[in-house]
Image (cartoon, rainbow, N blue to C red):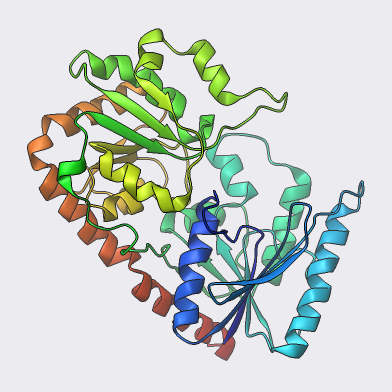
Length: 380
């Protein structure tokens, strides 16, 4: 098969990228290994690129800055490229996220899929904010063009269909793949006692503010507690840094026990997870999120959010812990419970890796995707 992904987030070696980039890197490598052709095309940044990375052809067009019609020019570049590409190497599947098909011209012989990574409607609900009418229009138009849908968790499937119509097209829940070699069983001897590790964008929706507010509540029982934060800074519409906002508003004790390391590459994460006593990700909302299962794959004790797909990922107290990410008190309780059971960290960590193998193993996930692709192509 020739599979074409619509995204500008394919990661570069040593670069910093988000969840979609991690997904594309791991999944496309697995597809290439099985003999399939893969192209990733997107619009973003200011440079044109056409290169091959790990067997994947990656094409990126600079984003248009033309006022009012930039969206049209961007989609037109993708349309023209897909016509040319399909002529050279016939495409079987075009896959994108929620609104990527909105203004795409469908071609006979190609099936178009949407993978629910978390669209505008989903996060508007999850973050309790107003729906942007232009983005909402694009998502609805995009969904009407899809021949099938893949949801990365049951949670995102259920909550997306509250606002958008799947039009009775095939839909299947298939988790993200996790690289079980990259996220290896960690060495317990490298764990630093009472070190909490957070990875992700430093912003409100990732729960970092509530996590920092929980630190003084935890330190009364565990004074050695320290939080290590790895991730890029977020900025308000005014340009103000979120990290600066935290430094201005957080209690002194929380700041004294927190270190901001800035963005790190995905390749570096395993080393930092290995040093953690507990990895903690109290995100307010995720479609699935990769950081929790990646840390679980390393047999680390993990605290994740009870909201969203948390209960699909972790059984509280068995292969990790869950917390209310909006409540510093709940976060503190989960951390205290974890440390009170530190003698069981090895057992809980091994259960966590078994869970990841059963749900996120790359080979298994790839085969599920290929089976679904063939089902959509055949029109079953």
